[in-house]
Image 1 (cartoon, each protein chain N blue to C red):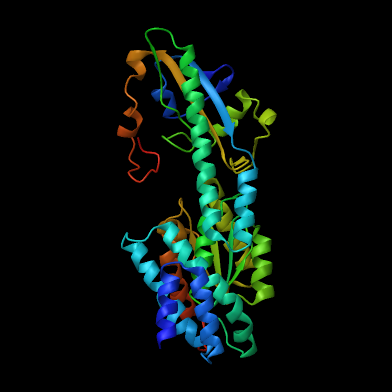
Image 2 (cartoon, one colour; image 1 turned 90 degrees about the horizontal axis):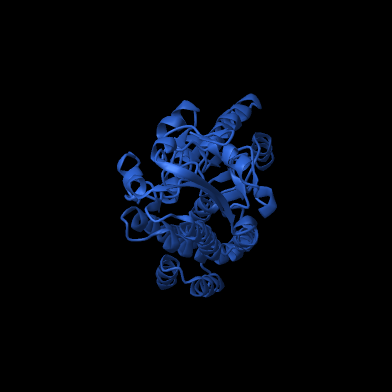
Length: 156
Length: 218
């Protein structure tokens, strides 16, 4: 699948083949919550550290979901939006991060990509969504039905 | 021994304040620090681990139990050192190069501490050289490598290889863990063990230390 001059490999191309438009996004909660979590851990409060880390992850996911909801403003009458797909999930290789970061000016948010494909700040989410005919994206759970990872924490 | 039973209960339910005051009272009354570990703290953490494996305790309960032992160890450590008591084992722990995740590693460290191990936690994004240097400087007998990204698994292999080429491989047993790690990957990179959870990591650490040491440890 090609988005402009950037090629996206793998299964996600089949999940998005009905799309007329592709939205690419990066969201971040920022570095602060990770720093507070680490400070708690350094002082021995591993419970607060864990809770803050979990809160950061939840907030990042909520921000990604907010983006998806905001995109519904751009839908035509017979259109729907696909589920969100992020590198490292749904058969999308982590290396797709590099392609996504070429399409989104993540540096303007202060988000950078480490050589390991990890985003910094840690509590950041990147991904793709497709917009297109309702018949292509009516079923939200379709990718999970095709995936063998029964233990995935984000199985829909 | 009523104090040790009460301390065991306090640790198991994660009551850090009560655990600390019970431990202090026991010490003041002449209870030997090493016996507090063997009679109360160790059994409490083992039980917490068993409850986790049984699906009755989850990560927060394990963390609360481990946190309850931290304050107790603050008062026990200097007393143990004065008495020349050795830890159950000495482990260098860290998240490998390129990876910044630390919650799982922190839980393993806390569980090991609760089990009487000395934990040298190097943090995250730790290079192979840093692991090797710590093994040498701290006379470690165990190394624990954590990774949460498939892209940082090669750093585990590189760390083991550097420990080997530095002539330190025979000194340590190396255990690995983290979401993308599997037993077959651990075998492929010549790790000595793989643990699926923090609770199982403590059991593994004990087994590996027993294999490693020729002298008995308390």
